[in-house]
Image 1 (spheres, rainbow, N blue to C red):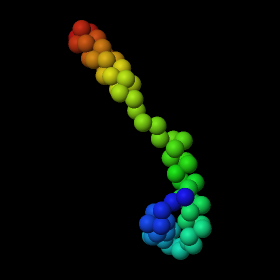
Image 2: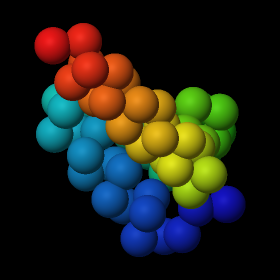
Image 3: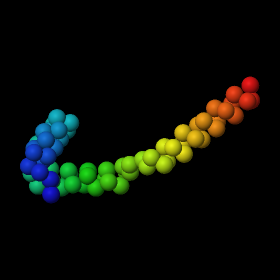
Image 4: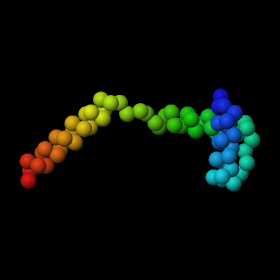
Length: 68
């Protein structure tokens, strides 16, 4: 369940974006669906992934320097 403030904020944003007022139940349903969507598409990046990426970038830079 979304907080009262979150619902009001969502209703306000929805009206600003689409020009349509929605009731609390609709705001709750749409807000919840949005949160579920974000939970599927947003995954925090693990530090070990960043470290591995940094290592790969350093290797590419060294290889490029040696190529010149």
